[in-house]
Structures are given as C-alpha cells and as structure tokens.
Amino acid sequence: MAARLQHVFAAAVSLSCIVLLVGKSHAQEKDSAPQLPTVLAALLDRERMIATGLFRFRTSSYILLPNGSQNGLSSSEFTVAVDGSDWIQRYVGSSNLTMSRGSYAATYYQTGKDTQSENKSLTLGGADGPLTRGAEKIVWRTCALVGQIVVPSVRDYVARHWHEALASDAVVNDLPCRVFDFPIERRDFFKALTAVDPSMVRAERATIRLCVAEQFGGGLVRYEVIGSSRSCDVTEAREFANVGEGVYLPRHWKRVRGQPETGQSVIEIELLNSQFVNQKLPANVFEFKVPAGTRITDNRPGGGTRVFTIAEEHDVVSVEDAVRLPLSPKPTFPPRAPGRARLLIILNALVLTALLGFAWRRRLQKRTGK
Image (cartoon, rainbow, N blue to C red):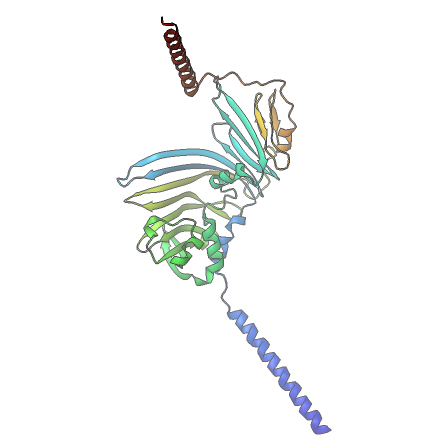
C-alpha cells in the first residue's frame, strides 16, 4: 500500500512539473511575441488625438506640368470646428458652410450675392449622407489626419501587416525618423492601395514607406509609394507645431502623385491657426444665420423630401431649428433674367414657327393656283 502511495505521489509531482514547464513556456512565447512599435502605434492613433478644436486652413491644388509650370490652380480658405464626431466647415469670405451634428447634416450655399440672380439654399440630410462625405475629404474632420496616413486602405494595411515592416532609422526633412518599409507583392496592390499609378502597371512589387517622428507624437513626416524604380505617390509634412495639449500638427503638408514627365497632381495644405484644442468650444461655434428668402430642402432620412422657403432671417443652432423655421407665404426669389440657353430655345422656336408658316402658305398657294 505504501509503495502504491509513493508511485501516486511521484506521478502527481511529475504532472505538476510538466504543467509548470508548459505554463512557463507559454509565458516566454507571449513575452517574445512581436509588439507593435510605440511610434507606429502613435501614428495609427493620431486620428483620436483631437477631441475638440477650431482650425483655419488654406488649401490649393494644381497640375505640375513637365516644364515646371502650374495648370488649373484652385485654392480656398476655410475654418473647421471639431467637437467629437460633430464638425462645421465655413468658407472664409462667404456664408457657405457644411456641418454635421448629431444624426443630421446641413449645407448652406449662396450664389449671386446682391445681384438679381441671387440664390440662397439650405439642404438638410443625414449625418452619413452624400452632403458630408464629399466635404470630409476636404476637411479631414478630425484634423489629426494632417500628419497622419490619409489613404484609408493604407492605414488598414499597416494596422494588419505592421509585423512585416522592415524598420530602420534616418534623417528626413532634417528630422530624426523611424522608417518602416512595407513590401507589397503585385497580387496585393489593390488590397493596400486605392489606386495604382500607371508607372506601376508592370511592376512585380512595390513598397510603402512611412517616415515617422517620435518626438512629434508619431507625426508622419514622409509617406511614399515606391514602384519598381521610383516613387509615384509622396506626402511630406513640415514645421510641426504644438497646437495644444501636446498635440503636434504640421504647418505645411503636401501630396504629389504621378510622374514628372507626364504631369503630377499636387495638393498643398497650410495650417494657419488653431484654437481650443481639446478644450471646451465657444457656445456659438455651430450657430449660423439663414437669410430671408432661403429655400430649404429637407432630405433627412425617413421623412421623404420637403421643400419650403422662409420669409425672415433667423439664427440657427441646430438642424432641428432650421426645420422649425416659419414658412414664407409665397416665393421670395426675384425673377431670373433669361439665360443664354433659354434665349436660344426661344429663337429656335420662333424660327421654326416662321418656317412652318411659310411652308403652309406655299401649300395653300399651290392648291388655289395663285
């Protein structure tokens, strides 16, 4: 009996040792598992760095021709206020704006100011509707995306494949950076990239390169897509500044796509001013005026479409305020002068009438023999 107890005790001790060894082995494997680099984690998290803020931007876009000249230059200046998922964009020098607040969105647009063809319109819709999707491409509504990876598919690819990156150190734009190269095989081009430059059509592989500055909270100093021999999509950020609460944004940002010999598409953004970063915003940030004679189109989800005109000017704080505005008893738009297209239609109708009348008279003359 004693011998049997000794065997049982020995077996229990052996089993305990095995369990301890297996547990220790799993713990060592967990400790040795690759960890997301801190600086890369900061880059991917920049989108959540700003909860509130008021920013002023100047943007320009143009085509850079092979001879170095610019073509099709367009520019605009606007302010963006951000409060969590709510935001409003106002264009400097005009009353035009786009806002998304709560579950609704609104766009106010005015043309022909102080002229006979003046047109004022306010369109209401859902917060995730077509009104705001286009505007968000311009606004980068969290503002932290300036200095972040701006291509969503690339952000997703980096988040999934960070462990495949080849890391190194380099000085980029006079800043010490951690450089991450992501090699991509041809079959995965469209998984990582929204669009592929024509110069990469025959390339077997490409590289996404991220140059990240740890001293600026994971700010992206340079991003480029390198084809078989050269870059075809490059963004650069310069002059990082502390805009408050330890949040660093670049004062200047530039994106160049294409090849020099065929012309390149260029977008430039300049951060002119920033206020109230991660602080409470002024109460009137989301307020705006709706002038008398504004035509309001209510396209909010679930209610069909309702079109009406207001008679007097009103201050609006929310989309609900706009819907409750009193209706105008009759349209207040001044009559529009006939446009060129309308004049052409009228002239064509007159000419056609004259020709038909002439043909009818000739026919009558032949019948009567006169």
